[in-house]
Amino acid sequence: MGTMKAWAVVECGKPLQEIDLPLPEPQGDEVLLEVTHAGVCHSDIHIWEGEYDLGGRGKLRMQDRGMTLPLAMGHEIVGRVLICGPGAAGKVKPGDVRLVFPWVGCGTCAACQRDEENMCPRGQSLGVYRNGGYATHVLALHWKHLVAIDGLDPALAATYACSGVTVFSAARKVLPLPPEEPVVLVGAGGLGLNAIAVLKALGHRRIVSVDVDPGKLVAAAAQGATDTVLADDDGPATTARIVAAAGGPVAAVIDLVNGTKTAAFAFDALRKGGKLVQVGLFGGEMRVPLPLMPIRALTIQGSYVGDVKELRELVAIAQQGKIPPIPVTTQPLPTADAALNRLRSGQVTGRIVLTAA
Ligand SMILES: [Zn+2]
Ligand SMILES: [Zn+2]
Image (cartoon, rainbow, N blue to C red; front, side, top):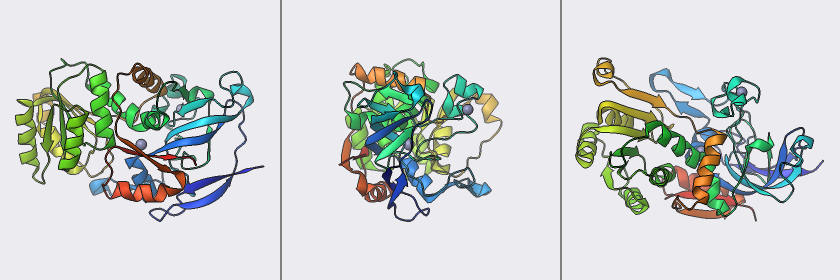
């Protein structure tokens, strides 16, 4: 049996370590791929640190949710098919380059049967519960999770598996809206820039981008945000600036940060019938004045990544040239630890994608 290398979390919050792991032998519908590209996502920082901040309810520990160490993170994966399990023969062949859908479930429940595996109660997402893309190889659990990306830059396509499909799914929860109706995006990092690109591809025009970092707002404007709002520490002032930029309270906010402060200023910016879609995992908690929910007929909805059907749809839209690329910088897979640290320090505009040597 061969071995593979992984740049793995061995202890939460400690530097990633290069380790050897047994090379998986694909069974059934499984497919073994050589990793060519692996995006570094902000949620990797939470997985690495091993916990989410639940505000007054303490911490949600990844290890209590079933994460085991050592773990190769990385859920934005493009790879080259190496070995097909017997059930995958004829579906893909060695040498095929494929984007790997990572948000996989048990494969048998009703959600999984509908190919909505991100809603499976027993998720086994790659890079979270199973080894992902910070490695020389990755095991896809089913050939149906592999998406052809012909004509796309694989480094950019890798980002569609998380940041792309996440914003695509969130955008579909606020649309349809008239194209000139402002949609507010909180956060202008990799997710925020992808959200601008996806909203534009879906025909939306008026996009208000909100961030604490003026540099990221410059990138958001370059990506096509029609308005930008600097979020200072004072929530009510930020709400007032959002409302001013949008010309009134807003129909929709997609909160890609989703921390205590952003949730408060986003909620307060909603108009009657407005919807807040919560996507980010920054953490904390939110206090909602209950009568305002019915009086203003508001909706607060969570959105967790997306399903493989949405990923295929997104890739097809990208293949039509409708999604302007976000800034992507590449660096070698063995520098995964340095990439993660740069992302944690907030120094990254767009996305870092790790590449095989
Ligand atoms: Zn991610
Ligand atoms: Zn399932």
